[in-house]
Image 1 (spheres, rainbow, N blue to C red):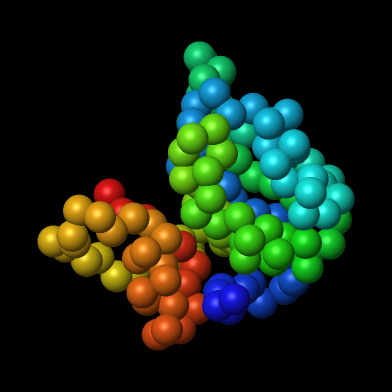
Image 2 (cartoon, one colour):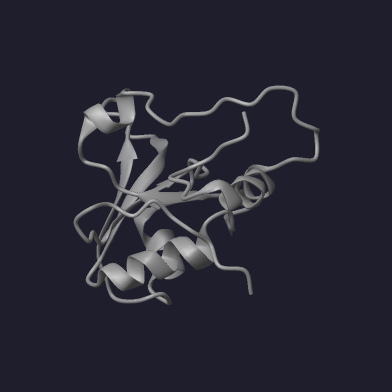
Length: 134
């Protein structure tokens, strides 16, 4: 198969961000999905402090960084509860996310382009941290 490239953090990490989740996705559902990849240490679905409703993203922590990498390689842009999820390395440094460094915005995409098609098209140019069609 085709090899995906990912922008791996400098220090080997076992923590992943899982986004674009259906608001009904729970920790138990994510555990069932990710345990096949390798031993999971913890999962946290982020929720609104007042309503406790899911915010549509979670953090999954594996015991082994290689399992986390395998989860990105095999599960990014796959369906969890009928919604395509987006998986990327967890970046704890907010300045990296907010800098805008390396962000590319593309307009006027064909209607049939989804997150996976966008990723597959641009990975030839280098590692991709995350991509999303909005």
